[in-house]
Length: 212
Image 1 (tube, rainbow, N blue to C red):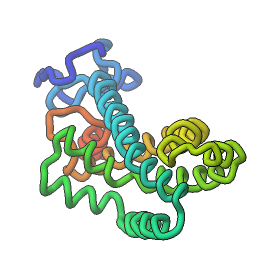
Image 2 (cartoon, one colour):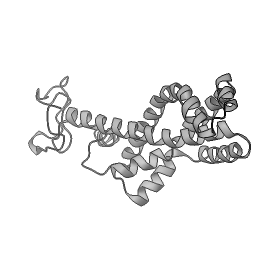
Image 3 (cartoon, rainbow, N blue to C red):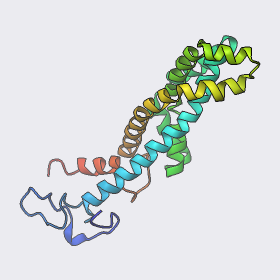
Image 4 (cartoon, one colour):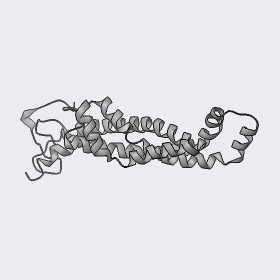
């Protein structure tokens, strides 16, 4: 980043971007109402959003994969219980629940990651449940069961390696969903506390200057 995203200069407040008259070459995208460089805050905001997205995807992936693989492998009553939990989670709006929880516990980086991680696991669970059901019917699983392999060995040595590609393929979609959710929270004022740069905070600040 060309500048410190937290550095303020009130003599350079609200400078326009480089394609407009009155711009400053040192601030390509202009400055905000406190004189902070927009490009630097955008770069740092993108970094924080990606960090939240990746950490959320990893946390929700662990939770959702554990539930999905368990449901897909054992089936029966276990599958019915986990499917009920997934259905219950799908009936809860992500942003509204995240708003309520973050408002109660505070908008720290760790709290946001935990809240989103515990709200986005259902997609992993649905995908991994279906993939595990397909893998469970394969001949190599039947051969391992005939040879006396335990359920845990079959799951960790035979099923998980074969459904891992599905998990990794689906992960970017969860990263995008998490970035969208944290941006919405920041825009509504319930995300990361200021002066932390974030994409939602930049959007929120920009709306005040759209007509000026």
